Image (cartoon, rainbow, N blue to C red):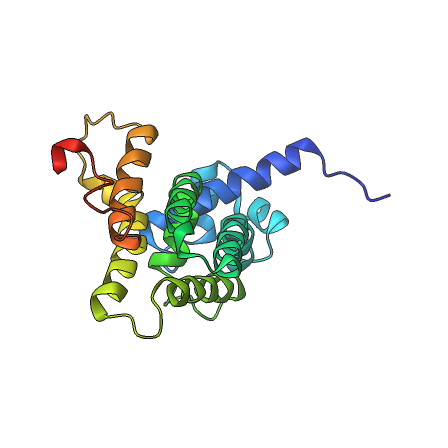
Length: 203
């Protein structure tokens, strides 16, 4: 029977992944060193290397849960093949963005520059599959732009974009969730946002 990692080791690994994601999202993977991660997490660099063999291994471990969840959402949407599921997809994507905002920022915003890393290859593949399912072969440039602005813009807003907020802002995740669902629905599911579906004061 495999041994269970000591709670302190699990906690340290989780703390390192959390701090790493914050740094990767804030200043970029390339500009973040293991020493920087160690300093911000309150560990030595040797402690980081005890848990993760390299910065790439740390990125892999930190981002994988979000990638797995994103792949699952894409699989369900593609297999269903039902465009009526777009609104449900929007809700699920918004929940994913809020739950894994730094990780999603890394693979959506930095995905092209990190394209040689296996975990980012997986993420990029999932993004392309989703784009193909939403933007069919004859999709207009406008539809393609809607998709890119929708996902990329949301990922930016939830991390780097928040730096432009009023420092005293008290916007809650519930408020963000409602706003993101409305805006992403308009971008990714414009058909369902018809005059009939809009609030009365917008008709």
